[in-house]
Length: 455
Image 1: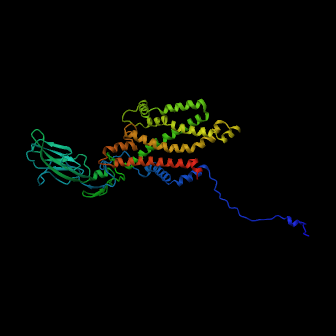
Image 2: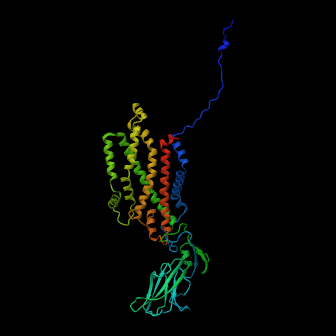
Image 3: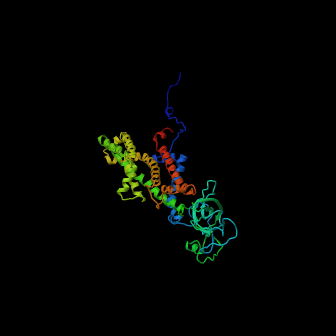
């Protein structure tokens, strides 16, 4: 017979040891998660570094490179970067009356310098006079002699001194025989002249290149002022002008988008939250503003502010951008607010007694900040490009005030001979616009909740 009696020890609890493995993710806020996603986007991160570097270049650059953007270096006009800055010390200029340098045909009386090129020649065959031309390119079969420098309707004057805007480099002179009526004959002689940069002790001291007691003498060499990015057609430092132009371009490119995006956020939030007929009226007004022509209003603002042709139109441009560019942001924010207004937590807040200002400031605007930041990053390159375009066609920033657009307008006139005057401002415009666009793409991906939920 089996004993079925139970004791108290039979009811003691059974203990078991086991380990539970779990995968946990640290709690991250919305902004922390967005930053992690932005850092994973290499293009957006590089663009962010470029924008930070551009701001440092614009703000801190003038403290490091202390060169006046309006200062003209007449000895280095339209000089590309890397050009030799050496200048030979020579005696002060003295008038030249011509001489009798041995030789035949067109020749130089002495070595050509930026101070003067002195030419002599013999009477050409069948000539009743002579005309001197100068060119920066070799003369080919088309007989493009260049610019006329002097003409003499007699065979008594057989010398000429050229002092017009001479720069270091090679010039091509042509001596052409003139007929009885001043017509060009076939008798021509050519001469290549290499011009060397020179200066005098007095000029070097006056410009601060050397101290007054330097002891330099004729025949010594000195270095002129250094221009890392070269100079423009007036001898102004390109680096200093790019820094000054960046301040103008970025004030317009960042200031105007900030103002019209801010207005668009307020306008779109109000329209979306109120809804109904008020929303419809406000959005129809936004549609009306979209239809207004920007260029026409830019001209009207310039006229109303009394800004004439050739004067800088920075303020009309700012006003036109702020007045006409806000509807896109207002539409975007309105759509976001209409979506957020139907969420359960908004209804719960209303049931708990939350007022309209609290709902807008505490819930709606913070939840649209991601969209607003993306909108700003896309609006900035658009405003920079608009400023550059208007300055390029002469309706924006006018010389001598530098901006990247006005510098490009000046550089395109000499791009065949001195392309650096166009390349540098064009590169800054292109890099800035591209960086903001890529950053905007990265922010859009980082703030997009749908993309976050798929991972």
